Length: 68
Image 1 (cartoon, rainbow, N blue to C red):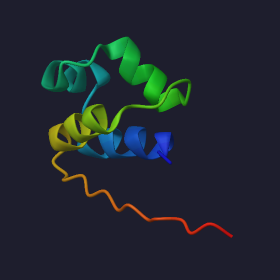
Image 2 (cartoon, one colour):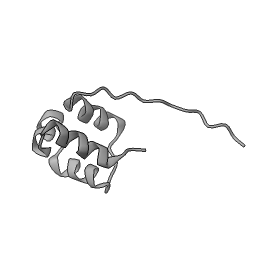
Image 3 (cartoon, helix red, strand yellow):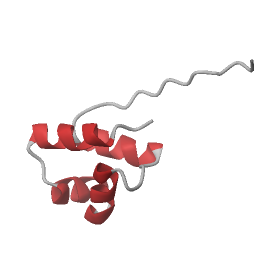
Image 4 (cartoon, rainbow, N blue to C red):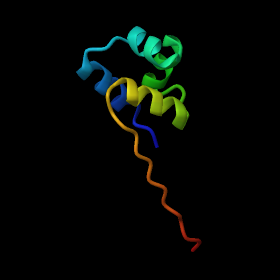
């Protein structure tokens, strides 16, 4: 699950505007806004591009659920 508020929080901590992240990632600013508001969720590829732009690495943990 993606914490959309975290995306905005990290972007603001870096002092970046959505327009800069859009330029850096190639993701339209309107789409970034929708990610941050929770209207849509980014793909892992989009999330990785955003995190790299913000100076972070994205690490994905996959947990296999057992059938009950």
